[in-house]
Length: 334
Ligand SMILES: Nc1nc2c(c(=O)[nH]1)N[C@H]1C(S)=C(S)[C@@H](COP(=O)(O)O)O[C@H]1N2
Ligand SMILES: [Mo]
Image (tube, rainbow, N blue to C red; front, side, top):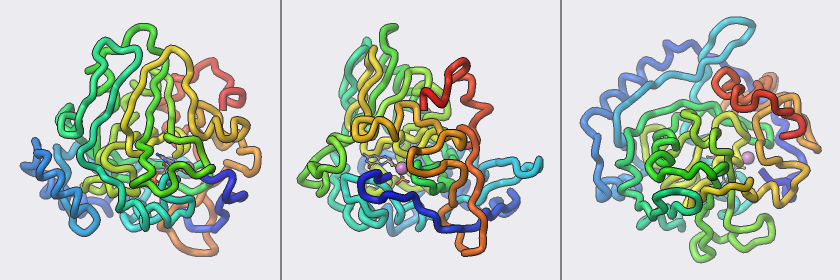
């Protein structure tokens, strides 16, 4: 997103390509094979894999839970949405610490130092602690979760993430009853992140969720995508993925998680409160002040005559998350 840099969201028209699930059987078999016998991956191997993440297909550390395309309903029929190609997922990014152009993170993020890495957990928890990446990786079984993602700017992707529910980590640190919100604070190192300190945003990048949103099983702590460790531009070595909210809620390269009683500040809300609310649920009925949110274009699908896709309420996860907002006015709480 880039409210100060780019005034309009993208309006390229690309096709709504939909493919039946059968197309993915080949890939599922491939990944099953790759996934066998790789539980309990040590840090050394992980480091090795991180180093080769962009050039080599590496198995993810954990069992393959489910690999299928994202189901969607079009004209009443159940269809499967195509997984976005790896090249598109990793070359068209928002990661303002490395520049505001979509191609900047892929070009610049190689300077990010992802080892050693740890997350400081503080605030209203019984067990505040600093947890290093190795322990974090072992905390729970990693699974592949294919999620539809949508940026507030109007583009979307379908991404096979690797990770486990954030709730696993939250349970481990035992939040106090007074903890109502969780914030996620990204790394902000001007030595390795060239745009930290620039006037675009306040640093460090910060996002937040209400406790029940953070505990929702869909909310993923992610370490990889496409069966490989996260490439730096995607938020290595650990990021959040919240598929029913606009992309900016999914903080990258997290170094701190804080539990609070009051609703925390978020980077984009501080930068432009009228444009980016705290909830930021994907909602085609609530326009961004400067553009419509009714449709989106799916990255990786070319073609000039194609229609934009209709954006779905809660990004298509309505049946799983709508109850979190029962009784709330989602136009007021945008
Ligand atoms: N630290 C940090 N996290 C961030 C951002 C950022 O600039 N810095 N951009 C956000 C936005 S606007 C989006 S759309 C997603 C993009 O994630 P992706 O590059 O994996 O698609 O990351 C989010 N997380
Ligand atoms: Mo975004």
